[in-house]
Length: 265
Figure 1 (cartoon, rainbow, N blue to C red):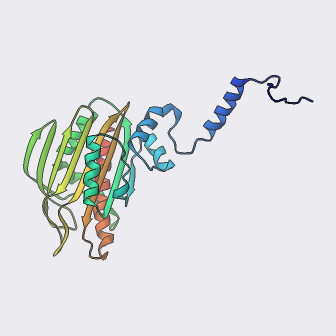
Figure 2 (cartoon, helix red, strand yellow; figure 1 turned 180 degrees about the vertical axis):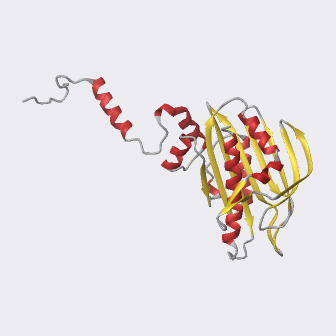
Figure 3 (tube, rainbow, N blue to C red; figure 1 turned 60 degrees about the vertical axis):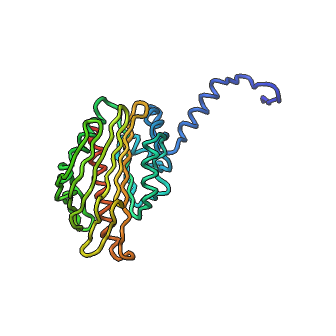
């Protein structure tokens, strides 16, 4: 019978073999949902861009899927990427302190022309009318907007601002502004209402309190997409919360999902 004496290595002891066994053990116990080792660059992009993801959300992003967070908290946004544009987005959302908020995230391979295609889709505001919006209330698709009249536009391919009068049920017509800036490795988009949004005879949303923002940027070999939409709406002490929340959140999610898909085209 062999005995182990302190200070001496057992016969046949092999450091490399032991290291291989330990490595196999720890790799086999990586929490489900973490990006695979073969996609380490994607995992690095996800970790650098976002925080507070569940294992399932991280796995979905690593597989190229769109992740949506409804009823998110504006004090704890998922986006933690650095830079002035990311910080501008966070500051504007926090300053709004919305009572309805949704986040949409995606990570796709970085390919030439992707951000330019996204910018072109954002500049085509007339095309927003045809984006399908799923109504949870009516359990069928509607157009995201059923009216989009451009009143002013200026800028170029590197950045545009477009003013519109638009309509979406169940609200009256209201003014809105769409703007984006496009750089070599990033795109920042913002939309807000430029007039009060009326719900029947009631003022549901004051000017500037419906805010959609989108930030897309390169991270290593990936492009990170982060969209967020918030509204500070008067829901009449919760009486109309169900209808307003479904209308605002559903449209944010539909719009951002549509734009995230443009990064895969």
